[in-house]
Length: 358
Image 1 (cartoon, rainbow, N blue to C red):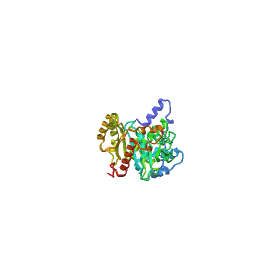
Image 2 (cartoon, one colour):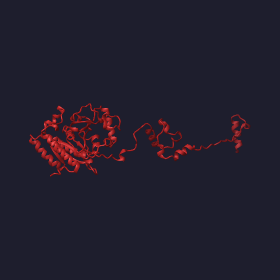
Image 3 (tube, rainbow, N blue to C red):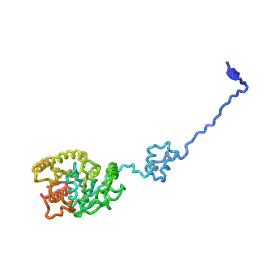
């Protein structure tokens, strides 16, 4: 059967006429889009050019024609830069700023060992020829300034909302020509924000101290919170000497094992600072304390830098707002601090605690 017969039968079925049938040949005009010249420019544009300063409107950094062809990561990077986001360049890759001053970091595994009191005493006692001594408080308790004759009203490093603020204006003068950078009184929200910032930027502390233009004869003594913290991590990055403070009691002896585990990653670095231990507040009136002191001496070996006997004149100094080292004649505890200071200075100068005079 021919095609015409099929069409005729179909029309007859529906009551139509075959004369009304017409075949229509469709005709379409295809227009092929050509890429606009702007896309060719974007394809050849180097990445550095796209990172140049753009208009204030964040949306204007994304050309409409390029959205489909530009990697999403690049578009997001441009948006972050336009709204003033933190640079994606890792400052760690640039290396830590070189500090000329010597840095002593005072640590402990637990609180209540007299750490802040000792930091203040060292800040007053260390007198390197032609140098200054700066006591830096990285403990949120903000107690160090009180031991140096200051008050909670002193401005502190934690109070700054600007990450790049110069700390020079925050420095206050303490006892015995020492200088102090307080932590400052802040709320929980600000403290958590600062600690998050420190966790993200391990060179935060070193950059700030580098801005103070300290020289070779200057010394920085840093008070850190007990146990692990982001503050301790920051301080260990720049430590020349790590000084652990412990007591001659059973709890402190056990905590030394915790401190060893805490500091192990730091001490295993290629060039760590020297690690030393000081036994503080030794009660010479109790045989148990003397015995445990001997145990600690054997436990620490050549890491032991000194022993400071219990001295109520030192412990009461805070209550009377006085510098215990200014007392004449020196009490036994004050003399121990002065001896410890001498050993520390020799350690910083010669790399050994043994007296070069002997």
